[in-house]
Image (cartoon, helix red, strand yellow):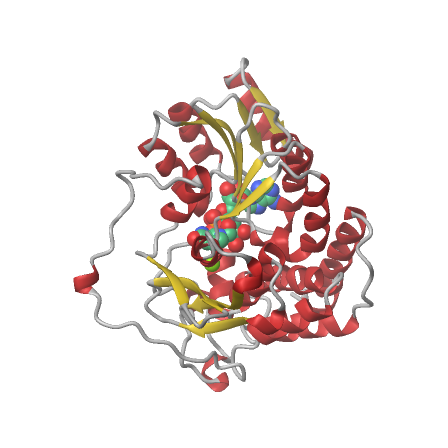
Length: 384
Ligand code: NAD
Ligand code: MG
């Protein structure tokens, strides 16, 4: 039995992970789960999966859980998340929290040399340089990507060496506003931005998909995970979301990973790697029903999220952290109706312009830059 910790069990990735585990209950068991504010769903999950450790956002909810489950270990807040990442009994830690709050728990899991099934892309973007240094220090820790594109790249590279890679080709659905002009995007609503054509996901990543900032985050994530230069990373719009990404090799061969757009497969692969296994919850792709697979360039004039990420990534050091933190707050402000859709790009761009880059000597630097950037965005754009 492999014991799994799920950080962010109440989210879209978290609930899918629980379905994967249910389908393979002879092999996997839930050791620990964490939620933030959705206490009801967390309670349901506790009843169903009987985890030994539980973490929740605030102390009052934690006290409630403590009185209901006196024999379980209950944690709360950011410190609680860290403790969850560090549990000795875990075999796998799935990081399915949304946003940079996931960094410290991931760091703890690396220090304990766990397998980290990494969904939380913000960690690799904001702290990638630091995480990579840490992985050298703790060589038994391993990060298996869960993000569908990175899982696809990882799968496509099995049996190959990094030196043989020519280009990582990251596919993008193009988001809900694909084909729209700047004029048409000026007054789009939150509701419109939350409608993703192919994937059902949490709110933050759905907005990121509509701006293509998600694709930008994924470019940096790919660079950090696979050590491939930015010059050799490309984004292609592929509206059908069937090819989850591909790798072009030096000899011109392209290897792609194809499947239905469903996160359960990359989640399971991160648990079972290097083996591939059946699971009743996994849907099969019917190739005969596929009508077409198309590819086109990103419209960088309209969707600036990708180019800004390349810029932040190439600058390196603390700049990717600023890109990520500015976007997190911009998305929060957009969801609250405080800024317009296109201001998300403006905020990221301006935050990057006003940032003085620093060397990442410790995790403290990342935490400081993250905090300062959030403050800067609130001060300059958080009007009522
Ligand atoms: P979600 O919003 O559905 O879920 C987020 C989870 O994090 C919830 O369990 C929530 O309780 C928890 N959480 C949020 N804020 C928290 C905080 N401050 N402290 C502690 N816990 C907190 O998000 P999601 O769509 O499941 O995405 C999770 C992560 O996976 C993100 O980093 C996202 O980019 C990545 N990802 C998601 C998908 C997808 O299909 N949903 C695909 C690829 C990558
Ligand atoms: Mg993705």
